[in-house]
Image 1: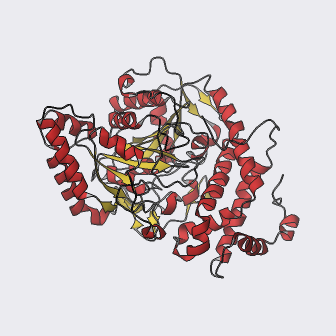
Image 2: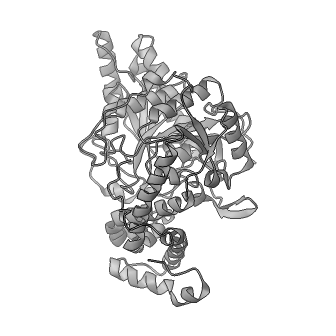
Image 3: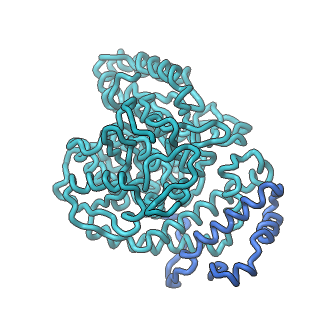
Length: 70
Length: 467
């Protein structure tokens, strides 16, 4: 499981504006044009933040922690 | 200006009949009325309720009945706590259309059962998604020590009300640092207990996997007293622990003797301003810390905390994003929308990483009892400041404020931000951290530092270099 890599080539293929437009439709969100660039900017920021989490190899035995008890 | 030093001092005076609860509450309400305009801490006052409650405390005293440990202590809560008969705003314009809350949040009920008196609700970032308390609908809560600067957030009203001595005790919530960051920037104590230790029932959630509540105060004994009063199982909160309460007050004066304390290295020693490093060194030297430990992949843990927060927060607010998008604060709106677009596999990877990180940190706590780290990498930034220089590089101010708090709340560790104050400087916070459910150890260390005058709340009204 990986995010689009932070290299020029795959990012060229990933069109964040299209992603935002299509996902908004899927989620039932009506995004005015004035808002879309900032949402796209935030999606790109999330992609960058996610990268170190996604590239980290976890053993299959590690479960998610949805109800977390420390 | 308040005459009291802390909540314990008020409770003692009320218990001993030196002052009535009514007089305390009247003075507090008057003080808030006179000073609130400049401070912008409160969004709601419940004066009538407070006066009624005060009369009950005074009647109990007259009847010779035992008074609670917080008798007559005025307190206030971040406006995401339910107050019966009041609309819970959670910092949002949208929530003004909600019906009034049918009952008080558990934490409020427990503090009142101990004799404390609720006076109102406090400003915050919209839906708790921020570290600054700059709110489009309810205004910014400025830092009481430097009004051009932020109070921190998202529980900014809770920290600023303590810093300005409007009330001696407040409650806030912390998902990624929202108690510790404002406590640090305002120069007060702020405790984020173990995840699940205190009931969140009757609070507006943000990211349920990571949401905690906790107290702010001006002394370690007040933190201990209020924390102890709020402990205990609660069927209304599915993550509230059923483990027995562990009172922290009885061991507060036990000192450091059997405690193994270490400094957090690596992630937690990089990227801070020199003033923060100096404050941290002061605490480290006072505690005679010789060991440094590393939490592996803390930066990755922080990133995972971000993904969980954004995913859960956005999913929670999706119905409102669908119907009332333009009524959101622009400071949260576009982040919430982007968060709703995070693939589920990214979220689940973050939740799995959380379990992995928990195991790594457990191993660390087999070697040490208490860990020390800075609260924020910088002093309070200016309200309109977007970037700051760290190690010669410009970084975005707002997300960077959670650099040292996020990896710790990610796995539910208890952490107290304590105020390090030097004359003429802006407040700086240091976190004291322990293994889950070891709040008593944290408070012992804090109390020792307080007794040895290493830490103290920044005096309100003292002159500060603002730049």
